[in-house]
Structures are given as structure tokens and as C-alpha cells.
Amino acid sequence: MRLARCTTAAAVVAALTLTACGSGGGGAGDQEALSIAVGEPDSLTPGRQTVAFEHVTAIFAPLTGISDDSDLEYIAAESVESDDAITWTITLREGWTFQDGTPVTSQSYVDAWNYTAYAPNAWPNNGQFANVEGYEALNPLEGEPSATELSGLEVVDDTTFTVTLTAPDGQFPLQLSQGQTGFYPMPESAYDDLDAYDRAPVGNGPFQMVGTWEDDQPVFIERWEDYQGEDAEVEQVELRPYADQGTAYTDVQAGNLDILFLPADRYTVAADDFGDRLYSFDAPGISYLGLPTEFDERYADIRVRQAISLAIDREAINEVIYGGLYEPATAWTPPVEPGTPEGVCGEFCEFDPERAQELLAEAGGWEGPMEIVYPGGSGLDTLYEAYANQLRQNLGIADVVASPTTDFAEFFEVRTSGELGGPFFSRWGALYPSQQNTLRAFFTPTGGCAPCVQAVPEEIPELIAAADAEPDEQAAQQAYAAVQEAIAEDFVVPPTFFETYSFVVSERVSDLPSTAGSVDLSGVTLADA
Image (spheres, rainbow, N blue to C red):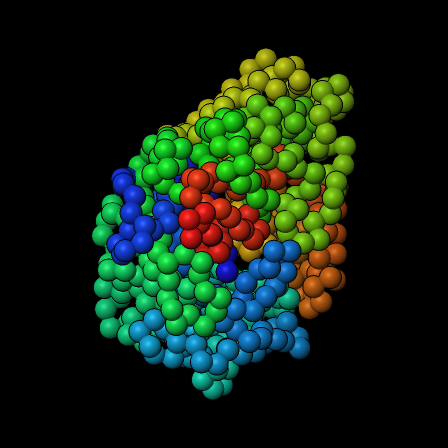
């Protein structure tokens, strides 16, 4: 089972600015624990957490998982099946229990899902149930909810329950994998005192809590010997919060920390500092250069959008800023998402400043300044200054500036307010490796990152819905690829980079396995083991 990385924009902040500090090695038991740098958790309850993926995905097991080839595999579920891609039957593996010894049943899932989906509880992962029948009754736009349970959930017996969706969705089994933690179960005892449970959650995964979570202190977890899945390789893990990634980086170099998600400002030096102890994995993350097509008529002409894309030297930026660890984007979804069409962006994702200037001239040229807006305080200054320099030089626009906001909160406010006057930060990390997740996020109104791409042609969401309805996986992949061909025709936004998730490790770590860019924490092996 893999460890899911933080993938929303808020999670990017957590990855770039870890929020608490700890020091020293060692563990809570006799053997020195494997240590990993993390951010301070917001919650350890699956339906509530947004930045505690490392913790929650170690303590809990999902229904499904992702293989090394980004294919579906079953973990807590025996099967997830449907004849029409609307009503799904989930059959659980028999004999699974929670870490308190109580059985994991269909009711364990249905109760947890209903609680997370009920709007008055205000759990952040509520939206993961938006496509389940009855969600609107629990989350009305106005007034009080008319129900407390999703009508689309039905318990058949202890190991079987059904889920009815609002529309066909052939990707539903993938959505039940590690990244969407709202789909995890909770034991009946959790509801007796949810605040206490949040500090010492009882899960069904490969690790169990040692003691309780205290603010700004490391969390220790240990291998749960009665786990019904594949046993963890290490006996104990210390999840250590850091306030400063520079400190964490030097701690790994000194052998005082074992695993660190590579800080953005160390991309260019990590290979020299760590050699083969730098791991870089293809990831379900992609960045675009957002364009304010709804706010600024200067971007309405497709030739302007194409010119901006052609003026960006992705290869140079990758080498200078990312140390060659990223990959220039040639499609609107990352390659780790199966079926992503290679090179669908065509010539407009290549660097061609002469062609860029020709297109801009054909479109009537450019008037006024261009301001590129991005979230400040998140390690993105060098990247966006490079964008500004390249657009200034390669398009001949005299006044191009990169303007950071104070933080992500201010950036979100500006991006949705209509105050943008130029390109802007636009990025998504998928919660499961499917073209669906990325395309929905950027190109549908309720996808999660709708303001990231503006003025989406009406046919694009319709094509995505048609691809969603494909029950056959190969047919679905081809349908999502066709969506990207339609996006290329309008070129509403230029993709810039396919991301990798990179980690540096101490000499204690002999193997760092991953799936779809994320570390498999339970599969990490130590050299002295």
C-alpha cells in the first residue's frame, strides 16, 4: 500500500512550509524508528484530515490500491463491481478487524461515509461524496439538510454494501484508493468521543498509534501484527514535524532523519548532496500557466494563448530551477495517469520564440503591462520570475512582472475575485492516477480547481462526463484522451510541467518503494534491518 502525498493547493503549502519542529532520532520502543519529516497534522481522522496523509494512510487501509503500473488492485475490498457504472457493489474481504479487535463491516464504511458527507459536521473531505446519490439532501445550497444519511448507500450484509451514484462513473473503483481518505472506515467506538479519537485513531491499516498525538510533537506508529494485508517492513515509524525544511535537509545529511520530501530550493543540489540516495518518482501532478480569459479580453484570442506557451523555454527552466527532475509537459494530464496521450499539445508546447512573436503580431500585438500572480511564501519566486523574464524577452512585451501575494489564502481570494490581470499559478496533484481526476479538477465547474482554468468551452465538461460513463477502462482512457484533443483545439491554457515527487534519504534506508509518485511507507527497508 502506498503513502499518499498531499495533493491539493493547500497541501502544496504544507509540503513547502512544514509547520512544526522536532529534533533527535530514536523511537518510542526498543528499536530506533524510521523517521520521516512531515507537516503538523490538522487531524488524524480520515474524513477530516487534509495535510496528514502520511499519518492516516499508514494507520488505515483503503478499499482499493494502485499497483506499480498505476493499475487498480484490491486491498480491504474483495471486489468493486457494477453492470451500469451507476450502482456499485462493494464486497469486503472477510476476517478484517480494526486495531481494537472489532470487526470491519459494511456498516463501518457506511457510517463513516455518512458522517463525513453530512454538511453540519463540516469535515473537509465531505466533497469526496458529491457524486453519491443523496448528497444534495445532506448538503443543500440553502437551509438545513433534509437527511442525515446518503440515500445511495445500502448495507446488504456484514461484508457487502452498495453505492448508487448520481451519474455513470467507470472510475469509481480508483476513487476508493489511498488518496481519498474520506472513503476509509471507522470503528463504532470512534463516535463516542470524536475529539479523543482524533488524537489516538484506531484504524485497519499496517501501523497503529503509539500513545496519542500531541501538538508540535512527533507521532509514533508501530507495525500492527494483526494487519490482514501485507506486513510492514519496519517495526516503528516516527512522523516528525519540522518548522524549517532547511533544517530537515541537513538532518538527513547528518543521518538524524531518514526520509524527506525534497524542498523546492534544493532541487538543483540534491543530486550532488545525496547521489543515489535521491529518489525521484513520476507523479500525478501537473502545472499550467493559468490565463485570465474571463477577466481580461487580451487573452481571448487563441493565438495569444499559443504565443505565451511557445515563449516559455520549459527545458531551460527544468534544468535551472528543477535540476532536471521535472519533465516539460506535452499534454494536459501527467503520464502516470494511464492513457495520457503523448504529445497532444503538439508544437505549441515547444519553445519557438520566433513563432510566438508571429502569432502575437497576427493577433494584433500586445498593449499594456502583464502581471503574473502567484502565491508568495511558497518557494515559487524563482520559477515565476523566470516566466516573467522569458515572456518579456521572447514576446517583446516591455512590462512583465512576477507579483507574489502574501500567502496562498490571499492568492485564492485574488484568483476568484476577477482582479487578475495576467497569467497565474495553476497546479493540481491528483488524488488517484486517472486522467479523470486531473481533467475534472481543471475543466469542470465542481472539479476542485475550477478557477485554475477559465472560460472552458461547454463541450469539454460534456466530453469528460461521457468519458466518465465508459465502464471499460481502455475505452475510458481513449475517451479522456479525446477530451485532451478537444482542449488542444481551443488551447485554453498552456501546460508547463509534469511533476515528480522527489525524496532524499539517510544511509539507513536501503530501498524506498513508491507507486504513482508516492512513498510506500510500509515497504521501506532499512540497511541495518
